[in-house]
Image 1 (spheres, rainbow, N blue to C red):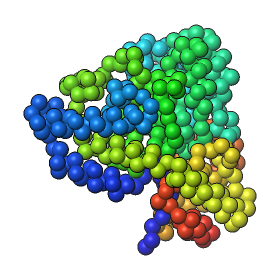
Image 2: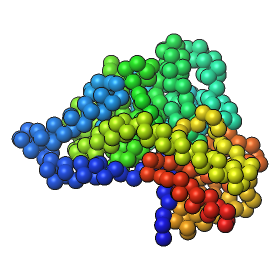
Image 3: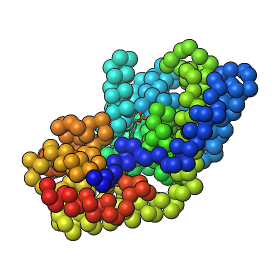
Image 4: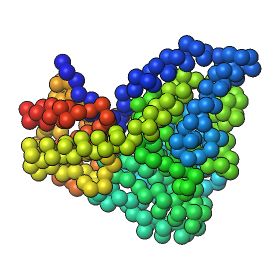
Length: 375
Ligand code: PLP
């Protein structure tokens, strides 16, 4: 059976060059980077070269990049640190964050009796920045945690606007940048952001590795203990091959960015047109005009009964996509993101998240549309 993979917001296929780099490091640089002999020094060199390369692509300094097991860990760490190291008394966020932020904020907010405020979300996924400013003007020590690109609908946050507001009112600003790092340009030195996070498997790199960007001058403490790795703030023997693979993946993402972005933008337009031609009245969830270029979330004019079985039926035909984030796509519960944005009627209709990469073709979209017609 031919398969079609249209779930690139959940994870992405590794580039062959990344697989080659990981394999090379696994066989050639097996030393423990904490060892002082030549094998260890060599492995340490691989890590530091990767750190410099990542920092150069993002316009920050190498010491501002701390390697982690991925973005869930990095988000948890930063939010916890804001409470215990920066003594914030309030967290301002939204209900459309990824669970890696939302559940962490809810859990820690409860544990440490921190005030948690959720900003209003418009139907197009936009965050209410007037409400943000009104809250910030109350001058409570605050962490603002707002994602850059929403992983379910692709709505985008204006990082400069939010960051400037945070600076104006002395709030710390954390952004979950998982869906945008590697897919759009960053200059972290210029951007008014204190903390950002990334996960390699979202940009054609390996799973189980990512990093936190922590602006120079912000001193965070570890949440785990037992080693001096990453200057003692993130102990544990480094996955050298994964870190090297992540740096290679980010390097290739940025080298190919303008061509691949243009290609993927074209695919998304093709998909919208093909779905409109076939189903007529489709609704783009989030912003039809300003959604991020690789994520398309559509509400199909189909019977509510089909909602539950649609992914299963597509999967039977070898087509992979999802309703929301991967961790809830098998669930019958409506997506927590769509629940914030859609009315009662639309929330029950089948909505699909179609997310693209440069590996997709218009043929993939034709196959999806033909399969949807049979459901
Ligand atoms: N934040 C967002 C926006 C995501 O899409 C994901 C992945 O699904 C995560 C965080 C979690 O990242 P990781 O898989 O590295 O833990």
